[in-house]
Length: 439
Image (cartoon, rainbow, N blue to C red; front, side, top):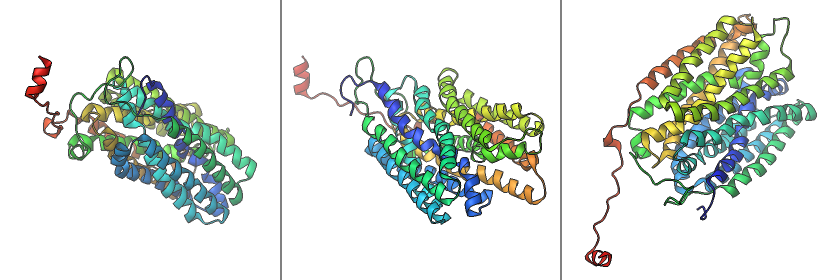
């Protein structure tokens, strides 16, 4: 519990220390080419740890959301620290002995649990600290998840250059990641506080007001499932590019007069991470001004237009490809950061953390769909003798269709029917003695 006079502005840095760490997941594409070379994997196989990690993120968030609400953010951040760091250590062991299943188990399964619990650990706490600006508050913290790759991508590339891209070099890089992130995440564990139930003068959270819906009731509403589809479609469209970012830009312009080098591809991943991060704080803060439904219209509608431009332009313009990818990833990040505030608008703050956890199963689904669509189609096109931008054209048009589905689902969102609301607390009548005391 926060002591009297505790500043609510200390809570976002605590959340950032966790989210910046677990955001390393978005730099996985840097490890794909070395793993494929060292262990003889296909693009689809090398995506498996990332895919499983995202699946476990959604599942652990869904099943752990109620525990996070019950036990608080410090407990959740501790669990995230242990799982995420030990996942890297297991992956390091797997790379050292060249057992790929250990990398999948460590990074994907164990580390994925750390991803999910860590991701939702500060959300409801931040919304309660910042009831006046929920979009901005969650955007600040969730910005860290998008920005994690901005640090991890060049850092990982430098380690692989120093340690080597063989199995032992990859193992050493995983080991350093696991130990470093454990220390960094510990800062959030020690710093985080929950607000007092009663509003403190000037800088505390307001008491619960407005409609409040429990997590159990929320999953029975059409609004929850419409938002599930919105999030799933938006994430699928963005994560397909993000997971394969480095090899995608290399393949896209391989047949041009200015091919993309390995270091430039790593820089592209870092740029995408910056756009992802900026979108989380920028677009989510904008949603406080124009509304959640309107901002998702932008994410889904303009996002489809960006994909169309990439598909139609092909490899004719590298700046256009990079610009459109940056816009898409800013929408991708903004969608994540805005959804907790969207949930708060619809269901209140009563169990918003648990509801958010259940909604993240959409991320699990998208974490499989996005990379699977892009990698599987690229592998099939390569087998058919195609190369360059033609490897991805079909995938891009599929993403446009998915965003259109999400756009329709967003239009169907309406206020939650009062029958799903929690009853207001009953105010007890004063006893005769209390009444006489007042008199």
